[in-house]
Image (cartoon, rainbow over the protein chains, first blue to last red):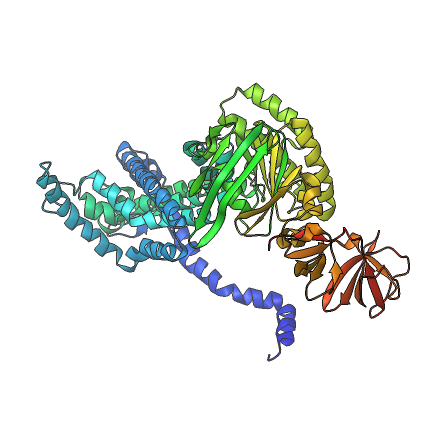
Length: 292
Length: 348
């Protein structure tokens, strides 16, 4: 135990057993928090709602067919659109921000990165409530517009407010992966492109964008996935005006007590996300071919 | 300047980074179709000068003209100057063909013209079979050829090469050296190579500017740099030499070493003398031709010849050995040289 060689030998000889033991916590975690709940959700989706919640027989496909009613499809589509727009805004703001951060001196880079993650130190709910204060008719934004003769305006409880909230909440998750891939980019590649006659837009399109694509895709997933399923922001900033799929699912479980339909909707969201993650995986396989 | 066709005229260019003067009043004229080298130790300012010519760096003062046109207000992407980067900077996500064609695509040339010019230049560098390969699958030498092809396909007025051979193995380096020279004749583009490697500069270039701490110390042909260095720095940097500091006094050299050495009048204003190893002959101590006497410190066998260090009066001389029988460490020997052998040096 004391000498380095004995530790080395030990690791060598007991490898398989030790490795198996080491995987126990992760496996336990996955089984209890992933596999079992997922199996339950899948099972519930094909059962009938109990009168006071819970599930009962018989097995049915009703929940699945019900999802394709226009009312529910509309909510799904509008959720995807909201999450998509929020992701697009997060990219449009996050990419330049990440680019600027990489150009700072090392000290300021650290400061900027801390500033990017700083909001996470505050509770998500409190931050969202803060937007209510900013956005309502008596809020700063409305007052500011009133001063220049454009107000008062009610921003709160609109679709725009939801998108703003989603963008705000998840933008750090866009900045960080993009920053990481910009850091890895050899700045000489941009100089080479410029030397060969490429203007700023062409350099962005043909060098910067393709080479930071893995980071961009990761950032987009990190923003899109939690945005799609989010129900707090639509609730607090969207009021009752527009619902997103997350609200719908929550309502099935907590208000309508229709667990099977809630499970079916969850599966739909899950299926959608699996498809997106698979697309991402195939894109990143392609970029890996380029080498370091 | 004896030749009228100056292509690139660098005049009084200075650039400071904080307290460091990277370029200090640099003036160089580069002629059309010349193979020019900027040679110096790292940090001498040669890379800064290269970046000024390419447009990635703006000088604090001075002018740079290409074909008589002021280059400084022109952004890098509009200059008829291409640069081959030390790291090659190939686009990892593009095939060889797209890498080489990149500069032409920037000019919005028609697709078939791009493809035929890429073909042509890939033939020149001998890489037609690697057209669809990604850079990471290529060897170092092949990557270098792609980088070169990418830089010359635009037919620039001036091609800048930043340490073009430093990333290559010793053996490939020799081949590429000859290839660069051949290419320069073939494509008829003016080459400016930046290097810290004196062999590279001396063997490739028509003329060499030796730089030190932001200043051009001497600008000459390789032969003149070797035969007639003006400063201790250049004599020391280019080739091997033994430096004797001192002063001239009525035909003799007064210094710490080699007292009473008689030297020609050309050494009148010199602050030091340089002796090239091949100008020195090692002789027995009792030889009347011996100007100094001492003992052998070390012998270096080089294959086709050998070098010996000989210490005399506190100075270590480096001399080429011509005998088949190598002396041993500690052997007493004398050194002889022609009266015209010492090269007078006038600056530090």
